[in-house]
Image (cartoon, rainbow, N blue to C red; front, side, top):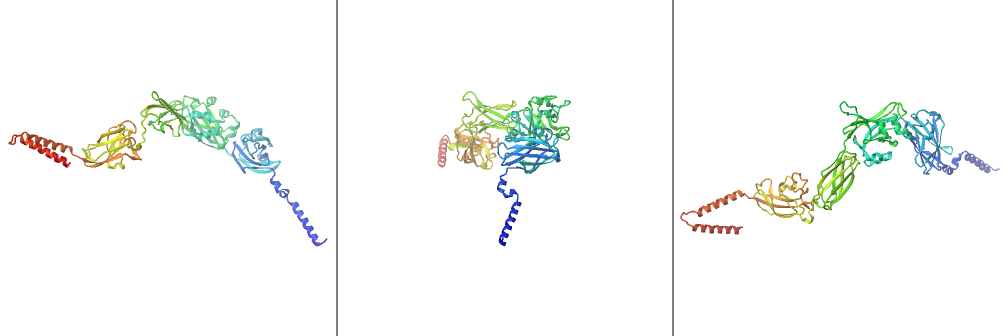
Length: 583
């Protein structure tokens, strides 16, 4: 054997030894990655003791895996085989930590919808109480091969706060689970408040944990009835020498006026009370009654180590509904408003009705807003102006109101094609009135005289207003001034609407909110004039004196005789002619 051959043989032997030392999984990495596996979604699953833990699994290349929860070290160990029945590669294993280890494990474990628990096998002795707070090992196997590990951390349960809400009476039967409650909150049918109208639902939102395992396997009525959980409503403001009113829990549970809705995902427990059907001891509830609502966990039960309570006050109010002061015009988008004490989200039906000539009925159903108000809109563009209609609003719990309203003409203020117009000329005035040559008001209204500062002080600049003018054109409109003019001045004459259709000028008294000006292209319809104030008292006195003098001269016999009267008359005519020519 040559030296070169010997070196080559030695190299082959060494390579063979090295290859033999490499694990099989590394020799065929392609086949290794194709092996079925399962893994935990989170390395640590945290949950409060007594609640339901959600253990998420991801599966690849298999639809089956076995999860081991716990170990001999903590005296609780159970193997749970799950199946990915819907084939989406994901399984959520739900574990009721309240009953784990206390009986058959079949009731302890289940999966989210679409998958299944195939088998459970506890390898440790049974327990006589819920699992204690601790860290429990988690492992998952596929084909008897462990593929991942994690930890289940059980912490102490908590008792938080009570938030009080209200909901319409009609919502009591439409909020039976956590999803329906969440939908009602989002839609505004459940609203946070400390007052509830009698007949509506008192919604009590308790924030606490560690009770949802018990609620998942026990009848809620049974838990409340046996005192494991206790809910109470006790009056805090009873009348003098009267015992406080209090909720009769047993009878109220019996007539289905109390509904408990657990939301374990958010650690929230809702206790809903139908205040119209719930039974109370020591008298019937009345407006103004205040109650302390309290949830108590019994310290002798497995839910708490000692009695724990959380509560808040709720005041019951009467059921009321009132319409606002409707102002309706023969136009689209007309609104009727009102307020009510019933729960936000309640439905209110508003109806407009006219009987007799051109009868009609218009109906709109709206919902009460969080501030207790409601608004309903109507299209009244086809309604004849000055028609009287009945306005009626009907809400829940027997609430309602009605009134009559006269529909006024459409007051957009905008003068169509410039049909609102004014004509006024410079001239004289006695200081107490101003005459407008003509005024065209398409929907009736008023002619108003303003001082020149109208643009900066629309209300304060008002000097006087005419009486109501019918629609059309009026000639020689006289406007009486509130205060006489003392000197020559310029004025702005403006056309104003009768926006509230009462034929009374209300622009000044309403601070400009009623009887606004007519407008063209957004600007008020106006005309300007210069007025010269004439002292009519002086003129009349001068004329009277001249007439008296003339009469005395004509009647004298002082050497002139009748001929002087003719000369005086001619002279007067001559002077009059001269005056006319000068004019």
